[in-house]
Length: 358
Ligand code: NAD
Image (cartoon, rainbow, N blue to C red; front, side, top):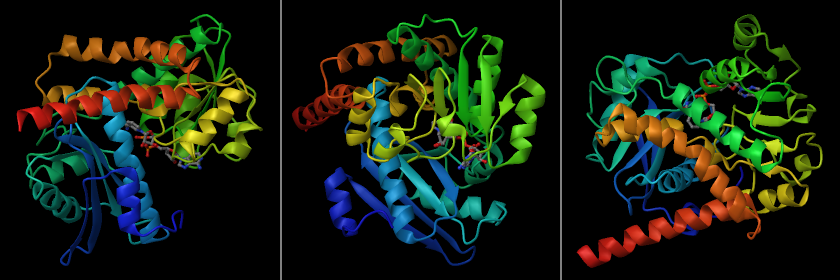
């Protein structure tokens, strides 16, 4: 368990609007939806399907992830709030089923659009399409609802973020001759390998799923290390693309990279303190919720009716946004602090508009 505080203390300390639990007796689904903020609009955020050791771990995860979505939407200039959901798997190997997905879809539907679900770890386009049989408030399917797999867009945004970090670190924008170490080569990691190999980078990967490692070795010529060693590989960019909480204050001392920039949500265990430690260590940090916003921009943008051209432009803007935040971080305690400051100003602006309109 990560938090000793009561659930209400956790909600109030992070500023959540709602935390809702649901059990479906027929399928045994246990799920949680957390809406952090709707100050800027309805909230789009993925559904994570994962085995948690305890309910407390699931609550901790959904609260942190949903707050990150609020920041992600705000920093990306989207008129959307932040939310996320988790499905607590009863055991690690439980296969996904249509009944389970449809039960989750009915839970999502009870929010009447204040929460719009999409993919996250453990959920694929088929699962989304099954959910969409029960609710229209879901994005990222291929047949029943729109959007498709957002991972390639997320990877493209991370790639733009990496370019911005390289420039800021005075290493040029060119990936040729650079080494990028990637932890986790699932949906996003594989797309990132493709972009990096096309750009001429040397790629080192690790994943607990051997099939995924074999795929990127064959397809993109990636080198491999054991998953216990990937975070300590000597490289130009370290890209955590698996789960969150992988870098803490102690791990910062073991990093052998000038840049940390990856797709995983909540890369830093304690983002406030660990981002300061990174700055002190001279490591450029491409803030996770800034650089991994490509998938959200794609699905939220489609939901809002943006054209393909606008979607592409908004994804490309991740480069400029990252540059702007890195420059601002020179005067702030960390990159994370600089990014949060901009996001919170926009959210406060949204709340003021609400009050005036009301
Ligand atoms: P995924 O489930 O497809 O891939 C995750 C990969 O990480 C899997 O291959 C898994 O085996 C591997 N993994 C898990 N634990 C590991 C460990 N300890 N060491 C090495 N590998 C490990 O998920 P994804 O969609 O690629 O998302 C990856 C991360 O990016 C997640 O944190 C997710 O929240 C975040 N993210 C994803 C998107 C998106 O569009 N999919 C958008 C924003 C953020």
